[in-house]
Structure formats: C-alpha cells, structure tokens
Image (cartoon, rainbow, N blue to C red; front, side, top):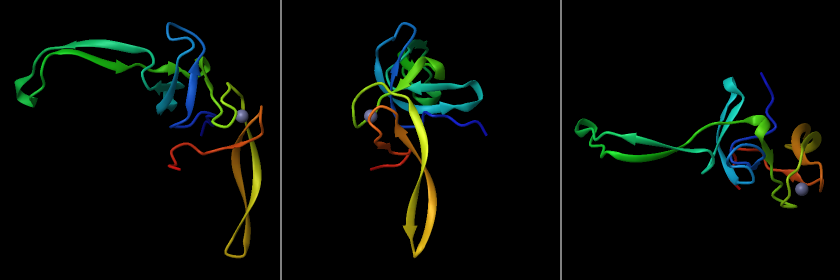
Length: 120
Ligand SMILES: [Zn+2]
C-alpha cells in the first residue's frame, strides 16, 4: 500500500493553483488518484435542478474538488508552519510489554504529530 504523509484531518496549505495559500483541513484522502479533498479549497459550483423525488431544491451547490497531493503541504500544529513530515519509531510500554510504534513528526520543530483520523 502506498504511504501517504498526509492523513485525514491534517491541516494543509495549498501550494499551487487558484487556491494557492489557502489553508484547510483534509476531509478525505483519495488514494487511487493521489488526491485529497481539502475543506473549502478548490470549490466548484454545481447548478442543480430541483428534484422533487428526493426533495432536493434546485440551485447552486458548492463542493470541494480534489487537489493533487503534491500541491499541498502539511501545517504543523505545534509550530504553525508549513513543514515536511518524517517518521520515527517510539517505544511504547503497555501491559508490561514494549512495543515499537511508528509516529509522524515535524521536521522543523521535531514535535510528534497526531495520527490522522484520531480525535484528541
Ligand atoms: Zn512543527
């Protein structure tokens, strides 16, 4: 499986395209196409017709479009800067056993970053 350095719920900044410089939270990772959906970034407006069968009113529907993973950079929650993400192993003791656990860390401030998808 491909390893993505960006995880769901990470905060990223867009580095290319019309939304360059925008910061948002990752809503979804699209592994097959190497793209991510970022909250309020790369919005596209779709005009929809009213559909009484599903009680959907017509109008404008704004929707995030995927951004290529190479066009976003992770923002470190600790130092609040664009950064590169590294991986390292930490030892974690649980039930008397020591396990090695892989964690992500910020290459700028060395803070361990939360794994995506987990609530704090
Ligand atoms: Zn940092």
